[in-house]
Amino acid sequence: MIIVMQKGAGDQEVTSVVDLIKKAGLDVHLSRGQELTIIGVIGDKTKLDPEELQTLAGVEKIMHVTAAWKRASRDFHPDNTKVELGPLSFGGEKISVIAGPCAVENWDQILEAARGVKAAGASALRGGAFKPRSNPYSFQGLAKQGLELLAEARAETGLPVVTELLSERDLDLVAEYADVIQIGARNMQNFILLKEAGKTGKPILLKRGMAATLEEFLLAAEYILAQGNPHVILCERGIRTFEDYTRNTLALNIIPMIKKVSHLPIIADPSHGTGRSDLVIPMSRAAIAAGADGLIIEVHPHPEKAMVDGPQSLNFAQFGELMKECRPIARTLGRNM
Image (cartoon, rainbow, N blue to C red; front, side, top):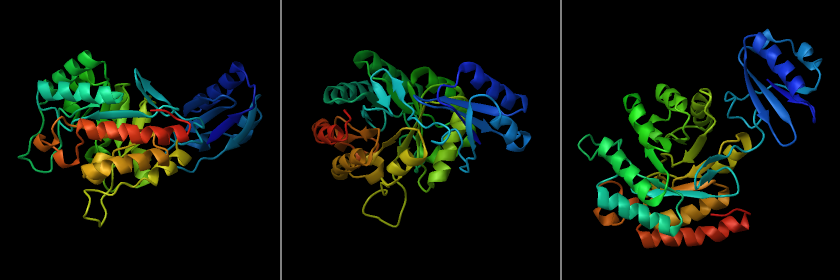
């Protein structure tokens, strides 16, 4: 249920409605837009009398929300949510690009990567310290040492750090070093992890699961939002289909659909979405054209030597070309990179 307040409704009128809802033991999501104030009701709505609510001063109308995701719904929050952190900005006119290697390998590699992507226009540095690998014998990341190297690269370049969290036991450690905590596709429905990450209050980059529906994706985001953390960035990173010429299928149609039903920003990951470096640039162009609020790109100083995901990583020249080709598309849409 949402309660739409009249234009010009004052703080006292809004407070009266909120107090009545809380008195019934229900939770409230308050959204103050440029023109309207909307009060979302979360919980057992049978405890409320709609007729009593309608008689309160300042109430315009009462509407019922059928979507299972409440806080993520555009009905609850009509205006786009903007997640901002230093040079990073998602959900507004700016299109931010997160770039860097899949995994932190050593100091020289991550520093060279950070300098290279910043020079080309990236707004943040990505790099995995904890790596979820299908093969248990593959490189799993440098753990704490990797986080320390990311922090040093941030100090050197000023780029915020985006890195993945795999387990609740590493939450405090990752939160200490990361500016944005990434929840990967394999953990999209790890609900305990989502709750704990949400409690940090840090921006959370939530990647879509390999076979997740739109509803499952937004319900996963709801777990984070329900902790009182509004800083959620969704990421389309490709889903599994019958196609075998690419690693995944980058389902860009979810971007405008998310924009329609949710206020949360959504970015695209054409590196994992294709698994092929030669497809990353054209799919980046397509993602921006589809309305993506940003990109997350794997960039390595020497992709042929990368310990993880070399075939889908760009070198610096390719990343520079990506930025060059995407900027005119952004400008056409009234945005900037």
